[in-house]
Every structure is written in structure tokens, then in C-alpha cells.
Amino acid sequence: MRISSNSVVGQSRLQNKLSVAWLIWGLAAAFYFFDYMARVTPSVMHRYLQLDFGMNEVQFGILTASFYVPYVLMQIPVGLMVDRISIRWLLTLMSLLTAFGCCVFGLADHLEMASVGRMLIGFSAAFAMISALRLATSWFPPNMLGLLAGLTQALGMLGAATGQAPVSFLVENIGWRQSMLAIALLFIVLAALLYQYIRDKPTTQVYDIKTQQEVGLSLFSGVRTVLSNRQTWINALYAGFLFGPTAVIGESIGAAYLQYGRGLHAHAAAFSIGLIFIGWSIGGPLSGWLSDRMGRRKPIMIVSAACGFVFSSLIIFYPGLNQTMLYALCFLLGFTNTGVAIAYALSTELHQRVVIGTAIAFTNMTSILVGAVLQPIVGKLVDHVAGTQAYHVENILLSDFQFGLKILPACSLIALMLVFMLKETYCNPLKNEA
Image (cartoon, rainbow, N blue to C red; front, top):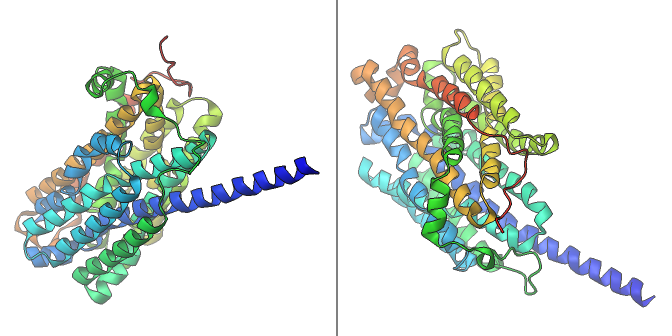
């Protein structure tokens, strides 16, 4: 009887611990969700931003890409910080910094100040996903980390979807500036919740993977090890060029293209873009599960790149697209773009455990950097053919948009070529050398 009673008590304690774990991870993942929402909001404010700041398409591309400058630069430093500084304090402060960045953006009276606001949001966003995954390693058993990584990415994409149609409705009813201030208020409330409930680890730590005890390389040696591996570069560039069409269509010029180039209503255009991220949030965990079941990485990556070429080409060039067809194509583009998630998994299998964190950070940094560079390039190409019309997005022709967006299918083709240069890992991590 005593054994049974102890067993029940032990099971109850485990359930309580997991309940707390889900709450803590959920709040960190909520920060990632709302940060992604703030990240993509300019895409549904396109015309209003142009009117207020008097900018053309290349300037709009620079504005949206300004988010990524600190985001990219902070990837590896953030990985080091979350191992050394309280995540509770980091996330609380970063949530408040995001609120401040939203206020700066919403109250800006010129393009440069708006870009500063975007950079503040980008700086704080760099902490979001890494912090959520780091908390997962402390609060959950290792056999749940794959699921939690997929769920975290899925929540980010759902945040991006929320930054489309719902924010578009908000912008039309209260204005883009007031919308940014409302989003800032959300982050202030979230900061209070993060401070109240986030704990770095359980009192009796069971699941935490003590990477500090395993690391046998200095910081610079680890970075050098990762960067000297040719496969790391190929894999990271694959992720970047594969994600490029989503970064441009989903986070920058896509809503304006569908509204003014394809003739959709503003809400329908925003909903179409949201479907890209909804598709991604479904396809990401599914593709990871399928790859694990197959025991192979490259087949999913090949299919993803090929589908990226087909669906981006149809969205950009197919004549006479109606609203229903655009909904379907946008969803399919996001659903099949999830070879990016497989590339992250592959990055962990190309190196020994002691440099896995650096490898993931480098892959994420490269994938984001490619998308950030593509945004102003597409804007520049549109400006080149649109001329002075580029200062009034509602007057840009479909052919002008297509001239700039035509490089996106080429990005998918580059990703397809790169994946054939990768070696198959068969889902097996590289063993540490003796």
C-alpha cells in the first residue's frame, strides 16, 4: 500500500511539474508569437507608411529590412547570454524593449526614426525563440524537445498570420500609429506575466542539459569549427534561399502586390499572406515528423525547394488569378516551405554536440540575412520600372511588381541546386570524437 501511495504522489508531482513547465514555455513562446506579429506589421501598413513618410519601394524595403540588422547580429551573442543570465529577466526586459520599439515606430515623424523603432523590435526579437528552446531544455525531458521546437516555430508563424488580416482590420479602423501603440500595450502586459511566472529551471533540476560541462572548445574555436565546414555553409544558404520568397512576399511587399497588382481587397490580400504562415505552422511540425519517420533529410528538402519554385512562379506570373486560387497558392507556398525547418535539424547533425548551438545560430542567421537582403533588392527592381509611380503604391502596375518579384522563383531554384550538394545524414548526429 505504501508503494502505491508513493507512486501516486510521484505521478502527481510529475504532472504538476509538467503543468508548470507548459506554462513557462508557453509564456516564452507567446513572446515569440507577438514578436513575429510585430515583425510583419509593416506589410499591411504599406500605403499608409508611404503617405506619411513619402518613400518609394526601395525605401520601404529598407524599412522592413532594418528589423533584421540587430536580429542577425545578435544570434550568437544571445545563445551565449541565455546560458549565463536569468532568462526571466532577459525576456521581461526584452518585452519592455519591444513595447518601446513599437512606440518609437508608431510615433515616428520620419523614415529614419521609424527604422530605429524597427531595429529595437529586431534586437529584442533575437531573444525570443532561443529563450523558449533554452527553457524547454530545463523544464522538459529530452525526448520532448523536437516536439517543442516544432511547436515554437509554429507559434511564430501563427503570430505572423495574426500580423496580417487582424492587424489590417485594426489599421483600417484606428490607424497604423494607434495600432502600433496597441501592440506596445500587449508587450507591457506580457512583460508583467513573464516576470511573474518565468523561472529559469525547476528547484530540483532533472532535465536540464548542462552544455557548459560538455563544452571542450572555446567560443572562437567553436565558431571556427562551424565556419570551416563546407556543408554548414551550403545548408545555411539553402535555408536562406528557400525562405527568401516567404520573407519577401510574407513580410514585405506581398500584401501590396496582391492588393494593387492583383486587385484583391485589403483584407483579402492580408488574409492571403496570413495563409502563408498558417500553412507554414502546419507544414513545419508535419515535415519534421515525416523526416524523422523516413530517417532521411534530403527528400523533404528537395520537394520543398521544387514546390517553392512552382508555387512562387504561379503566384507571381500566372494570369487571371482569382481570390480563391490565391488563397490556395499562398497556403501551399507556406505549407511546402518548411524545408527550412529540416535545414535546422540537419545543422545539428553536421557537427559534434559541443558546437551544435553555434551551428543552429549560424544557420538561422544566414537564412534571415538572405531574406533581409532580398527585400530592398526587390523594391529596387520595382522602382526601376515603376519610376515616380513607386512613391504611390496604389499606382504601381502588375508588370512592375512582377519585374521585381521574378527573382524569387530563381531563389527557389538556387536552393534546389544547393540541396543536391548536401550529404544525407540519415537523421544521425555526428558522434563526439574520443
